[in-house]
Length: 434
Image (tube, rainbow, N blue to C red; front, side, top):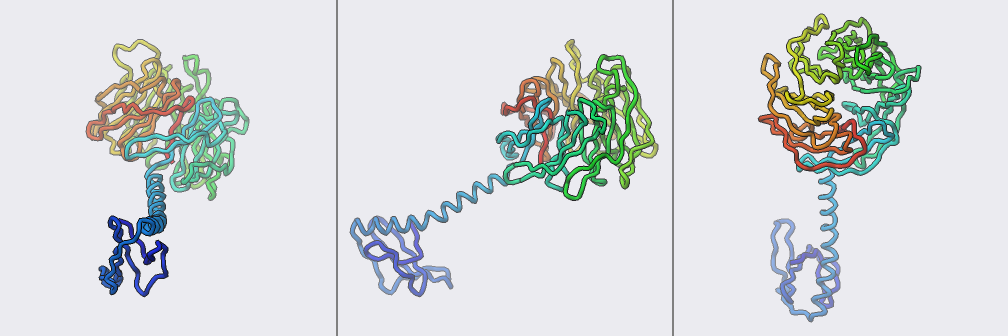
């Protein structure tokens, strides 16, 4: 059945509209003209009472004319459905280790579909972060000087537009950054410069661009491992109270704890927490309770449960455990830490040759960890992962196999299931939802 708001002549031509709008019903070869009473929203029979039986040519002509009119809303509906599907999808940006590109992809959280759309920036990418309220992506570089680039995000296409750049290290030390993060309250990029052995606080401008550091702290120290000849900051985290910045330093075997003035963005008053020689601190994570800390050491692949004193800015060791399997004898390399939003489950990646994701249940009140699951990462060298804000999905960057693999998360047990879905990205080292 096809509807038209104008009457059709016996020759199949749309005629001028009469006083009221008209519906025309096609049934086999009968054309029934009916007046539409828009005021009462019901049809009434035309005074003509007209049912006529047109010739085949007349009926086909009327059908074609009405079909053309009907095609317009059908096309609009298809376009609307496409736009609605795009609105459901979210942007992903994937950095490339020792490469010169940032890759973009769409992610549909309804069914876990990842759709890459190519290179969006030609820049070295060691780590990435998004601004909490502005459509801006920050990319930390592994180039000399540890450049931070700010890009404006086009949320409809995923395209990136460079706003500006600034170096975290004015001396231009080769090697660059290992991490950048955003402090929301002070609008600051916190940069851990692995090569230069320093932590920098870089102001964010009103337009989302980034300025040269307002403050820099140079670390000291070394360790017994060949990779510990000098300090190598690997992470930078603001404590829940906003008074301190904590920096795990792989080269110095310490967590540096800096006083942080959010108004001036000045880092000062350094104190430290020491780990066993050769451990190589890499990642630090606060539990939502604000009193428990988790520290992942890269070289020893052990995970420390720590207590945090927010008044003194001090760390105390509670427990330490290995993230590798008891019978594992290969190279150890802890890489990434993450937690469910409710604080019930902790996730860690083990690289080396184990290539596993380890899941722990977090004890309520104590913060102690109980092993829940050890599962293959789906590729080689699980460098990092990102948990979707719904808590349903984990995207894992397997750097050596050049894949991003998708896991579903059981929010009741914390367990992971490999969905078998993946996408190819050269040497992925960071996954950022925008």
